[in-house]
Image (tube, rainbow, N blue to C red; front, side, top):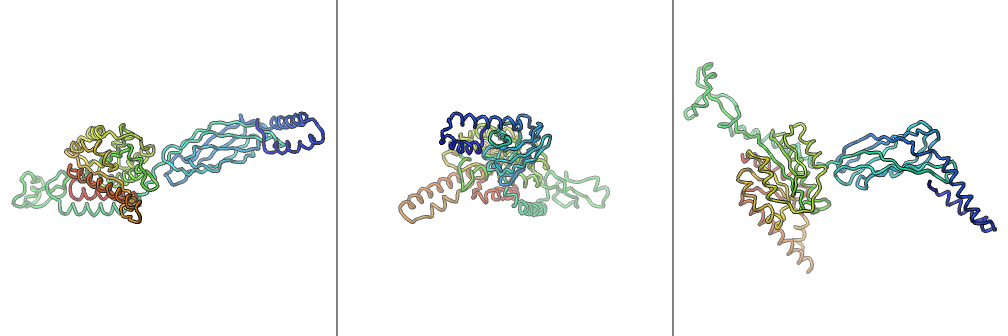
Length: 427
C-alpha cells in the first residue's frame, strides 16, 4: 500500500476538526480507514503482464526505441503511474508513464534511450502504482521485464571510407601497371623475349600461337592484417572529451572496413593482461558487424598491459607474415617497461604499424608563455613531447612504423599508414 499527495491534503484538512476539539486519534483513524479502503478498491498490480519489443542495438550518439506492452488481466480498471527504470547510462525517457487500462485491455508505452556509454544497457525494474477511486491510497508493486540494448561504437570515421576506397582503387591500378612480373597470381599472357624465365613459358598457349607465349604474374597483395587494440591503463586516459580507447576503436573499424575491401584477411585482438575480445576468420561480409559487436563491450582495464604476453599472443595467432597494427599510447614509461623489450621479436616476423593518439592540449601548453605558471607548464609539455619523439625513434630503429595524430584525425591517419605500406609493397 502507498499514500498519495491527496492523503497529505486530507491530513491537512483533518487539522480543522482537531482544532475544534475533536480527538486527534479519531481523525487519524478515519483518514487511515479511508486510505486503506481506497487502496483495496484499486486494481491489483500483481496480475499485470509485461512484454517488451523494439531495438536491440544502436550506435553511440544515436537513439533506440523500446516498447513496453502492459496488459491488465484483472477485472478492475487500472488507473495509476508506471515507472520504467533503466541504468543511468541508458539515458531513458520519459521516466514515468500515466496508466488508464480497462480490464482485459493492453497499452503500449514507448521509452526512448539516448545512451552515453558503449556496452549492454539493461532495464532495472518496472514499478506500477495503481490508484484507488479517491486517489488517496494506492497499491504498488514491481516486476522484472528483461531486455538488452547493445550500444555499439559510433564509428564516426566511416565518413572517410569512400575517400580511402578511391585511393585504394588508384593504388591497385598503379601497382598493377608497374608490378607485373614474378609473383603468385596469374595476370596475362605475352610473347617471349630474351631474358624471360623459361619456366614461365605456357606450352599449351604456345601450341595455339605462332610465337612462344609466357605467363605474367602479379605480386600477391592480399595479405593478413591483425589489428591489436591495447585496453590497458593508458587507454583510459582522456583526450578531449573521450578516452583514448574510443579513438582506437574508431580507427580499428575504419581500417577493418578498408582492408577487407582490399581483399585482405582482417583479424582483431583486444587485450591488456588478458584477451578481452577477438575476431578471427570472419568473411568480408560479416567482418565489420563482428568487429562492432565485439568492440561494444570493450572497456579500459586499470592494469598495465603485459607486453610479453601481447607479443606472444600475436605470434601465436599469426604464423605467416602479416601486418600487425598496434593501437596503443606512446607513454614512455609504460612502453619501455612493457612493450619495447619484445618489439624486435615481433618486427623480425611481421610488419608492425604502431598508432597512438596525440593530445593537442600538449602542443597548446608547449606554446604558451603568458606568465610563470604557463612557462613551467610549457617546459613540462615540451619535455613530454621530446620523450614521445624519442620513443617513436626507438620503435622505428626496431623496425616499427609509427603513426601519431589527434583523436579527430587518428582513424584516417592509421588507414593512410596502411595504404602507404601497401603502396610501398611492405605488406
